[in-house]
Length: 296
Image (cartoon, rainbow, N blue to C red):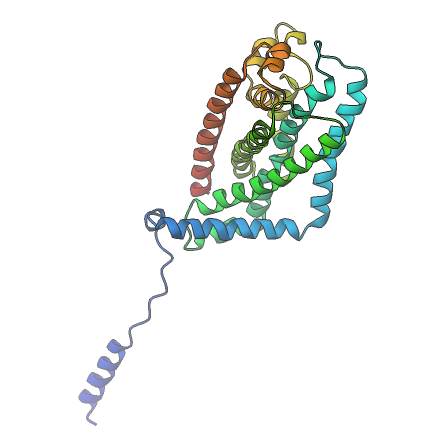
């Protein structure tokens, strides 16, 4: 073959050998426009991943279950032997709904710790590079944690009934109380997720979460009627989101009359405060967590 023809042939051959483009993972805009079924599937997969991680840590399950039982027993049998709230209600009846809310408050911290651990190991960077919905990681985490909190709440209710606690309003309000307890835990997982993405260190997240949570729990109607608290503390306690959740749970479990007797608030008002606080916490901290996740 003449030299010129050989060069021309090689040029054509090289032009035809175009490289194969790698599979695209999708731009952020494309992933934001994924169909709803695809988004739900992504959320389900990541929720399943978190549940499997929990199942593979049996000691974590054991200790995270025993701790609330110990708190419940201490408040019912130790403080219940010396504390009174007045009227016809025993301290045991008064404190059980508060212990349920307190358990959800501190159990919700696990979300932030788990997210910080995923950041520390580089797992979240891998999730960001995958062709999945941007909301799947956070919603999957909160969904799996809410299931865990729900199981924990049911076990605590059963344990409290063994210890002598009784619902006085019937089955429907009792189930509604469990729903309120789990929803409050769900709201706090969104705050915990934002803390995990912000602080980024698992050990520091746990310490940071205690700073706002501890005063919110103990400066509320959890363990004493608000009227018994110091006068300067009472306005803060009345408008606390923890008080709103506890009063709603207490009113559903014991009735509106008992709730008004101990805390001078009706169930309808407490429920309204709870709904407002729940929406504020979920909307604000979900938006902040999603923004933090996108920005890295």
